[in-house]
Length: 117
Length: 117
DNA sequence: TGTTCAATTGAACAGTTATTCATATGAAAA
DNA sequence: TTTTCATATGAATAACTGTTCAATTGAACA
Image 1: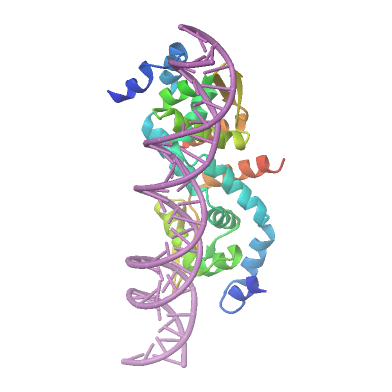
Image 2: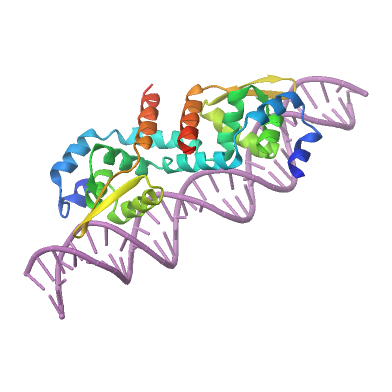
């Protein structure tokens, strides 16, 4: 196996490595976690989510609030929809979006407080 | 100003917009928040931080644990150092890294629990 | 002094991503 | 039906990012 080879030769602290290795999470879990954070790694998306945490809004309103084109906002909403982070209802031509997952807002609020130091 | 123009013509819910707009954070704050999350938007960095939350480790050990080359790990550590998320002490040729900010681990743990549903 | 080795660094490459622009959809109003 | 308008979408572009590779640094030891 290649995994071990990387170390076997040069690594120094075998005990530390084994101890920490045994506590590591699944590869898949780390992947999932970073993918979730990736959603919040863009200011436009954070703004959209923050705005939606205040109240339900249509695409046009969001675009106005976050100062982006309708198209750009729509693309981001599509992404957020795919992640089940927002939901929407159609009324005529318009689409009203709202938060589907309050969890993200907790993360954002937590980070806001930490940033304000 | 261009900011208003985007809306003025077509936007529908002026009250909603004004209400939400007044509650929005500073542009700079959103920028800062998303930059912080960007750090956690990569599985290798999450693994490194998680490993360091278990104990102090040298570059070589980390490389072994996260299954990456020393070089790749060193590049990421440089980035994390720049953000004051890790600190290190030199002992001879080796560099022992540890967490400088417990806050990130809280975020990761929070996201882990949420991911395990 | 010269060699070895952990760590660092810069340049290059490949892969990803956010925005723009043009176009399409589909519902309401004319 | 035809036009209008909110939203959605695909393709293209530009900017960014993570890893690799080659080379360097600097400490320990022969």
